[in-house]
Length: 331
Ligand SMILES: *Cc1c(COP(=O)(O)O)cnc(C)c1O
Image (cartoon, rainbow, N blue to C red):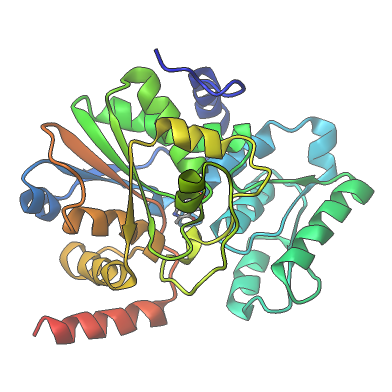
């Protein structure tokens, strides 16, 4: 029997599913003919790019925010993420008619600030580092009683992401492998718990970029470690896991069977490949899963494979450059 991390069980994922149904749509699962042919087994894409904010993070954010008391909801929420988590928090708060403050440094590009504003977030610009923005967030929590919504290391967030696992189990009775982009590990913890509670033999593979793969290095060290960030196309996978990590480090340790690290060129190639062959836009983080398949990094088993297409938020200019390179190389 699987021993579950004390505070989170499959029951919480079922509760999350009921809780978030009014805000979050079930996402489609499609078979990829071209990838299936390539690896000689059925490959399915779980389309988490089709959420209105373009990434799965809306599941965890919705489950967390809906779990707050009426009093807490009145006081509002805060985050210092400007990426997909920040967008998801702003989106959910807006839907529920709540205040959301996003604390950012003055280095955040205007395009990101504008999209957060469009979602109805209040922007507070503080200092010139992500750390300063984070400190301001926790100051707001102490002074005004707002709730800071954590991006991954929170039971409600993990359970929210885990609802993807329930949908996969329902849609794919012959599922044997799931490939999950990995950063702080909220996505993998939730999906891993949901799948392994049902079938402990189901293989869960995490994928990250080669450099600054903090969870990978932490698992190797046996404890959470800090790394410098380097440029990557998989920018949604950047960031630490927290030296005082409470949930996801242990859960990833428990539920992940294997981890694959992807070099930048292969992330780039996979983004262009999916645009060309599938007519589908995906951001670098999501393309890591495709790269693992194209690079035949997943050991063969009979049974179906699913890859989590975790998001599509990438600058079009970045994508266009990649496609030009790819087209040139494939002439
Ligand atoms: C946040 C994110 C991930 C990683 O999720 P974690 O829970 O931090 O591991 C993967 N892909 C996309 C697009 C994301 O936004």
